[in-house]
Image (cartoon, rainbow, N blue to C red; front, top):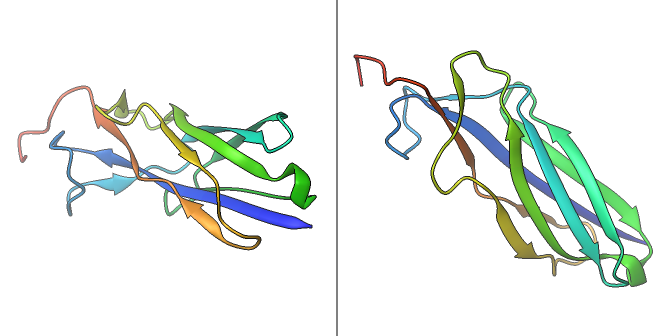
Length: 121
């Protein structure tokens, strides 16, 4: 059997500067969709939610012949009352999954922004 894992992080870019700094915070409960195509051509959809550290994880064990070939991860929603706008460049990430069994792929951080930038930024 083959085991694959995908994980990433979702943060609130409080100042909207596209950089994660001390004023920014992770988003717990943010929803992420991961769509993978297997080597046999089957399409698998996964839904994940971030934990209290802003990290989501998708993992599956399957026959080696059916393992993931390529995946797309994209943010779906943020339940944070102030940080609900997907930041530029955070709409999704496509990647080939060529890791051996037991290794994970880390997706770059997805960023949400506030509707208005606070005065202290």
